[in-house]
Length: 216
Image (tube, rainbow, N blue to C red; front, side, top):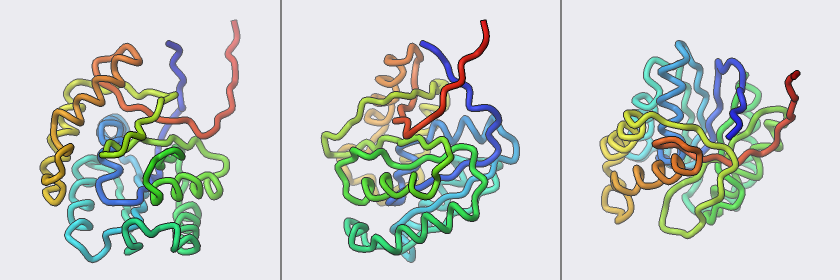
């Protein structure tokens, strides 16, 4: 498998429809980036959850997943499940994030996600982040919409296990879901690891990229 190098990453932009989407979709990648990039800048937008316990969960969780990073998190109060009805507000929020960001990599939901809020955000992200590396993350959930990733980020076993532990620790409001457990999270990361010859990994869908071939 051929590895592609993004070059130096100093800042990332994160877009999510709901609190916990980011941690589920790329928690291991966030841990790895924060560990490897001192002073990493993280600019995050979450569409729903403001003013609820979920917002407090999200703030604490992202601080744990991005230790030592310069974290700027904005959480809106768009009603869960109704983001398409708030298209203009969502579009404006993504535009505001873009104007205030110097992101080297952008993480957003993937376009074929079964949840309408996720799909809307996936569709709007590249309309603002036009010249960025945009990676669509997968969100484990009840729907059978698991994608076929085109890009993999290998994780150490330690970070895969830490991701699962932090999810259970920081999102107590979700523990009643029958799929929200350590086995689910480690099972998916192990599967993605098998697919890229690693022990664990997270999978992403590549929005668009320019390929530059090296010399002989």
